[in-house]
Amino acid sequence: MAQHRIFTTSVASVYPLYVAKAERKGRSRAEVDAIIRWLTGYSQDGLQTELDRKTDFETFFAEAPGMNPARSLITGVVCGVRVEEVEEPTMREIRYLDKLVDELARGRPMEKILRG
Image (cartoon, rainbow, N blue to C red; front, side):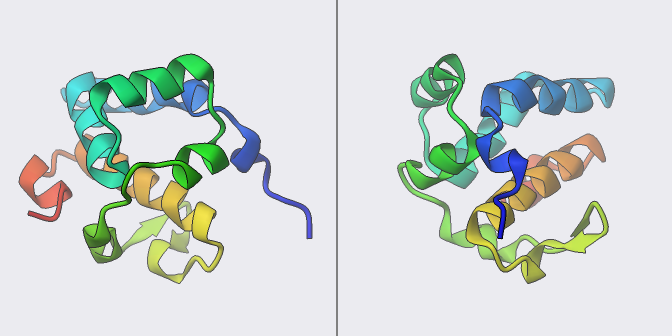
């Protein structure tokens, strides 16, 4: 089966879209960064390094310092697909990130977004 093209897409090419979506709704880049760091375990410097290197999504998640175990608490629908039902692991991680950014843009408090 052919690999989905999002796997080879650089995180840096999608990151500005996440930030723009958040900023349109009065949220900040710092909040987007906090979400990504919470999900993946990257430090701010580590995240910036991956963006500068134009790391693809598959590598970004595969090399993440520590995926947050609480990410399994992320549920809901992104693009008509329930994130908890996505079987392919990398696609599930991408959908988790999409869902968290959606929650941020919808005005959900950070402590709830980060499953605190």
